[in-house]
Image 1 (cartoon, one colour):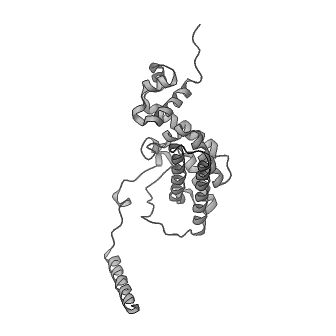
Image 2: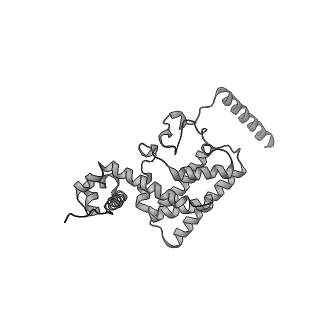
Image 3: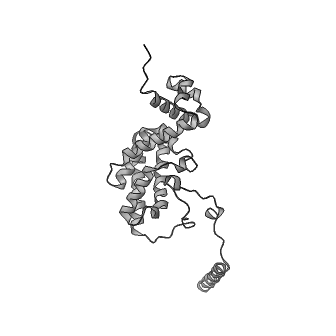
Length: 241
């Protein structure tokens, strides 16, 4: 009698790849290692995935879909962020794989449905278009991801886990509330460049121009204005001494 196909085999392969990646990163993730961890043979793994990158791509796609499914039913941004953190903590290995090298191809040019959903919700709450809030969304995402990774890597549990979870949600709400109050707020650093695009699959682009990262040099007019202000401040200080 021919052997029946194992319907769980592909999922076991992906789960094994996540565990190996979490333990040792790229060096630990070999096709032979995945086969052993999944309880199958190396040729069987190759029969389903051409190489290691194909496995990682499948893990990213599956994890993105599952994360989106967890966040999508929520009705408010705080609820969405709550579901985001819960998912990360319930699926720590897959979550780590999802964001490894996220700013580089191929991950950069893959769909980011949860990022886009949260950014869309920001636009609905604050007014305007989603692209207007890419920088704000990046702030919130960094906060969520940083908290998730601290808790995962730090093996946080008990009361500290609860406090970290809710302090992150409090900070998210504070940032959004501040953005709603001060829409004309001046932010640090250069203005968000139009050619820096995130979360839009093939349209996504990450600039590597030095101008985007280096502090801007003051123009002669700005330097003269600064000198006049410094002189005025010095005269004021002398007169009050």
